[in-house]
Amino acid sequence: MFNGRLVYYLRKQRGFSQDELAKVFDVTRGTVCNWEIGRRTPSTKQFIDIADFFGVSLDLFVERSTLGASKEILIQIDAFFNDLEISEKEKKRLFENIKKLFEEKKEK
Image (tube, rainbow, N blue to C red; front, side, top):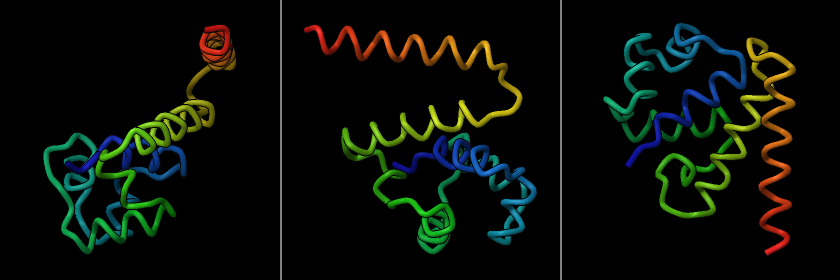
C-alpha cells in the first residue's frame, strides 16, 4: 500500500507547494493532493521518480516494515521541527515529550 502521507511530509520538509511538486512530476495539483491523502497511487514510474526526487527508499512508501515505520516517524518529526508555521514553544514541548518517552523506555 502506497504511503501518501510520506509525500506530504517530504514535500513540506523540502518547502514545496503542491503546485510546485505537480510541475516537477508533470501532473496536476489535484493529483499530488490525491497521492497525499491516499485517494490515488502514482504509476510505477512516478513512484520511482518520487522516491528518487526526495532521495528516499521505495520501502518507505510501501509501509512494509517496522524499520520503514520508524524512518517515517523520524521524517515526520524532522518535518515538524522544520515547519516555520509551528511555534518554537510547540517544538520545545514536543521535544520534551519525545525525550521523556525515550527515558521511560530506557528505564524499563
